Amino acid sequence: CYTLNFPLQTACSFDRLHEAFRNCQRCQLANTRCKTALWRGDPHAEVLFLGQCPGQVEDTTGLPFVGPSGNLLDLMLREAQFPEIYGISNIVGCSPNTGLANNRDDPTLAECLACSDRLWCLLLTVRPKIIVALGRLPATMFIANNPKAVALNEIIQLGSNHFAQMRHPAYLLRRLGQHSTYELTEAITFLKQLRDQLPDYNRPDHLQYFGEVCPFPPIEAYFNL
Ligand code: URA
Image 1 (cartoon, helix red, strand yellow):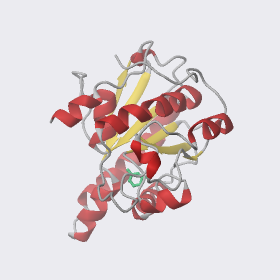
Image 2: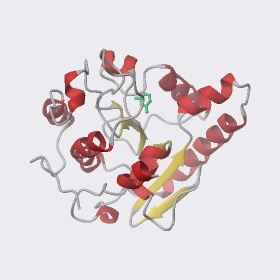
Image 3: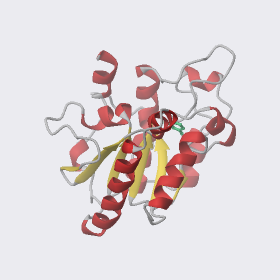
């Protein structure tokens, strides 16, 4: 199992998290990033939307999902009249597609693992009622090795934690470019359903599903596909 190498193994304040990770040097993305994009939204979020990694707009602002994908996500949440009780973050906190040498959208396994300290500290601090994976990478990180593999737009419970997987907004944007609105409509319907079910869920009192150590080795499955 991958164990944390960061001393922050318990919940802490967002200020402390920002301070700890702003100048993070755990992986090579530190050489080319402009800003680390830790979090956007309610620090006490009940819902965590989790994407893959920041893009160029996120790199310059230091906020997750504020480029074209983020604009679509915001529109979808507004359309679903989703209350402002959500936060947005990514598997990896720094953009892999900035800097002269970098021209890739996907983080590497090493980058994901290096950044799992940050994600784990975030989860311990926020303890969201549900984690909504945006796309396959974050979905794999949490649930790939689990027999109850999560279907799209469906909520599952593992231990005391709830998970769901939605299409990534970048995918939905591409589909809109192909004049297909079907998946977008489905995703908005799912957000409405989540909005209505949320009062029935409790915040997990402990992240039981994850056990004692950082839970993310399943992500290796994603890179082995
Ligand atoms: N795509 C992501 O997965 N995350 C962002 O923050 C922006 C685009």
